[in-house]
Length: 153
Image (cartoon, rainbow, N blue to C red):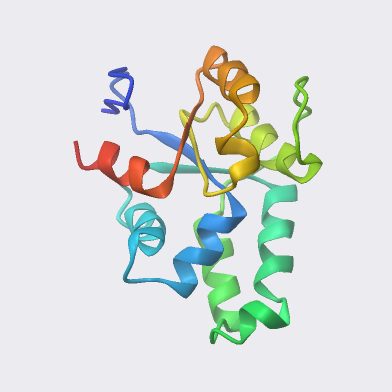
């Protein structure tokens, strides 16, 4: 049962989109807050929502030289893709988004009927119009720390 930060409870597992920065930070900082989010997914504490576009972006970012210097391997990339397994078809969001690259995250949330987007991206976190629009569609925007607090009750 998902008792979200706004007190909503639906009797089903929370469905959340993890932004690319959460996947990457989770691998780089496995023992810190970002790493606890993918770990919570492994323990099936929530259901992940993703899209092909989001998966492609995660793979592309994880293969960047400045990221691989943290010891990210192809096995790590494959592991993330396994966690993102139920990939959904892309969907267009009819909302203005500051960073067009974030449309993948918003689209995945809508297509997968997510309860939350978990992100550290300031373009999403600091956009009140986008957040209101997402809330109207039943999607909360949470930082990794807020998400873990909500999961832990």
